[in-house]
Amino acid sequence: MFHDVKWSPSEKKIARTAFDAALKSALAKVMAEFKRLANAASTPSEMWAIEHFLRQQRREIDELFDYRYSQLLLVFARLIREGHLDESLVAGLSAEKREIIRSFLAFAAKE
Image (cartoon, rainbow, N blue to C red; front, side, top):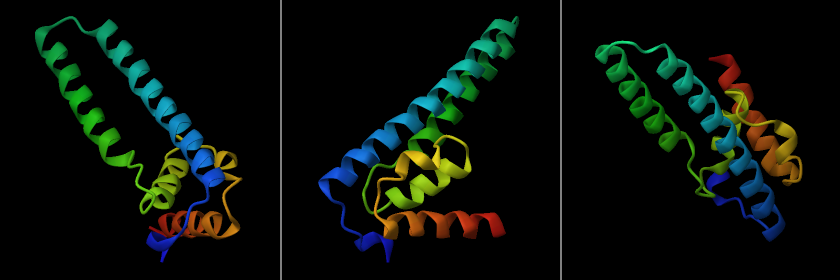
């Protein structure tokens, strides 16, 4: 299955670039929401709600952004589905890897 897929050095570079771009995008979205919430906060309870929001976002990002090659194709599919990664950034991967990503996307679309 996809756990056994081999990665060439050039694919590893493409994967790292795509992964880093997606992480930057996700963190930018969290940062923008944090700033919006912080600017609107006027009570201690709103301040603690922001802390809760940040902890939740940190947990989600830590779970999603898994840079193990055995998980990376599934991670890329999820990042594409959630709008953090443009599929064109993984265009340099082998046809096999792109097909695995597409199959994950198709499966997720059925749910």
